[in-house]
Image (tube, rainbow, N blue to C red; front, side, top):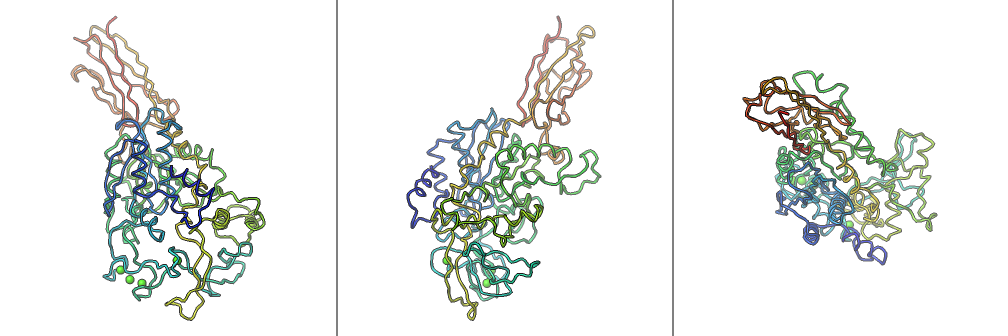
Length: 556
Ligand SMILES: [Ca+2]
Ligand SMILES: [Ca+2]
Ligand SMILES: [Ca+2]
Ligand SMILES: [Ca+2]
């Protein structure tokens, strides 16, 4: 709904309309979920009391995928893709193949609403009032709107020792100088602000708080900026952790975020779990067994997003997606919601907006590519700049204007450049063709699936041997190796309905080692005293695998 509105605005005129209004606020999210008639529950509230909701498709206990949008806070795109998935599931545009899908579209509502608030200052922090720089003052120095245009953008200060210069090809764009080419800088670049409390530091203690995507327990950044007083100190963090722990049926999480582990997978150990040296150290890499699954997740994504040029980190410190795998034991995917290669530059303005052949633009070049190619690389900033111009996006890129700055009285200071939120969150038409909903739907086809064949043999009076061949015909193993290690993904269990006394060989309840994907199987035998029973039944299941129930007939 929001998307339709945005398309309308862009196609007619958006003069005077902050382009960020295209993005969904907390109140709008709740309203849209209600209008769609989606089943939701509150799983927690943010520091400022805003509800964190999960939308649920399918039942509570079936094998499931958990999708989160924008745990980061400043990656508003994530929420849009999560809302798009909810619409697409509701309308039947995408299937879930009998699996359940849980979606938390806005896990960090305080940061989201702050960005969508009065000046669009981009933050990852929740509303907790905290003294970031230990000067016994709280939130005393955040960014300032120095040119009173209602936006927080950038400052550039004329300085030959600065790291930035004006692009030869795109005059409004600053690019980094190449020290190896002995290029001279023209500007220092800072965010728009001043030293409000005179402590010599700029914007060191602004709004909030704790960055939720730095507050999870795995690889936590102790005393880091925004990581919180301790792991999982925040209600938003605990809401997600509790939800995953309470739902053993979540096989995987998909996180639309600033991180990406699809274009570049996590690194893996060279050995299998069984070869790990004891005592086990903290798991900094994934075990060898799990590599193929992540390749599968990548390949599915790359089918539709191969041309993307992704420089995002594949892991962070204290992030949700790292936690979900390395502590939670679930498959965990981090995917960017958009890429600058999606920004199409109108051909009619080709000369004005020409952005290729910009040899200055080295900031985003891929060093692994050949040198000759790097000369033709365009950059995220250049395309964003061209897009803002072409679409006349209000509040995305700001013309440079000179101001008098209290901390740089004798220097030439200008305000302008990029509004910081724009660097992560473009005009939403840009990511209209991200196949995010289709991707999540495709993931639901990968789940492990059991096929069971039974052989019953009479060995004597009331004595039978039952052999079960349990095959996994799915594309993922029945347990991740990490899930087995952390014990947060449960093994397959075979459970009989006969009393335990009737088992002469084997047991009433049996836990199985992981069954690998694509047809791997295990064979298990029981010796059963059937006295008093003409048949029995068993159930084979785990929270992440659909149960198989069969009856075994004795006699005949
Ligand atoms: Ca302070
Ligand atoms: Ca401003
Ligand atoms: Ca201070
Ligand atoms: Ca200060």
